[in-house]
Length: 385
Image (cartoon, rainbow, N blue to C red; front, side):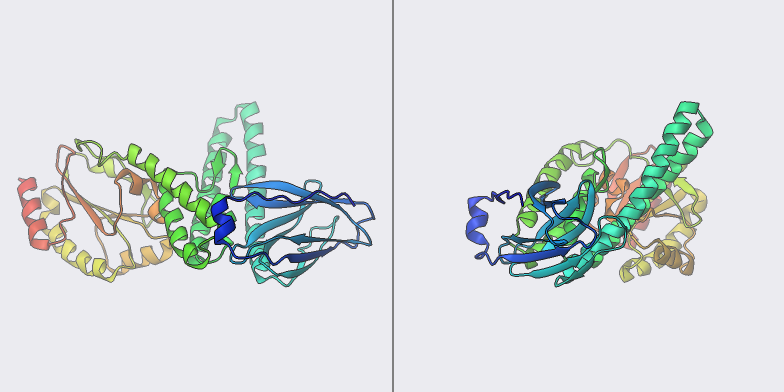
């Protein structure tokens, strides 16, 4: 067996803050692996996987110990060549047993780690989508060689849809499992180096939500501390790119999103009109009440040039569409299911829901957050003239 000393460098702060080591032991049975088959042990280093050991199979199995500090679970991976045999979440003192195979694609059998079983489900879901992504990318290459413009456009839409659906799935998973360490690899996975699932600047809102939850459970985890640093960098960049706060608003950014009938509607359709632009959530009971007041205002001024463009920041598009239809909202309602990470939210620097912008006929934002109906009525009446 080739021995490579596992040497993990952590900062002095982490060394003090995490509790004493209690080694975890992992045994991996590989019935179809001949003796001397080399198996690679890897570890997640914040946002990339690094190889830390190479072990030879003896009597159809390998064993290794992992030095994991209490309260600081780690992600380990076992590879045979380029094939990942198993992903593991290892806690201090764990005794994990795995049965897997070199030659078939059956899921590994894992005993002694419920978090590793959860990570297996997470990995399997993305593996299926990633396979579709690779197939579509290959078709795109062939279409580009043949200069088949129609097929290229079709494949672009399919790739875009696949990306959006994966991001929607991951947001739902993160929000539903915000205190699970398994959300860490979800947040940092990617289709390609240039296409991470969470690669937009405004994804910082999701990262902050995850950090707020995880730091209550794993305050000393290097993954959680690195997440805090990542958030700081993203927020700094966000402030630089902030279009609303850094300059006087002389015009408003356009928005292009699908409505309840999946028809793409642009905010720019209403150029030259007085517009109430609202960002909201269909889960907010107060917003539903406000919608009733807004319907009265809309009925009073619509024929004179008032438009309402309402952007839902919900993740569940089905629930949103149901509320829009049940309330019989007569204006344009749009949603892309990306929640607060939708590009429109960053363009308008949305920090609270609901948020409202009043746009005059010249396209300038002249007022914000007039949720008092009388004040809103007075402002609209002045602009409609």
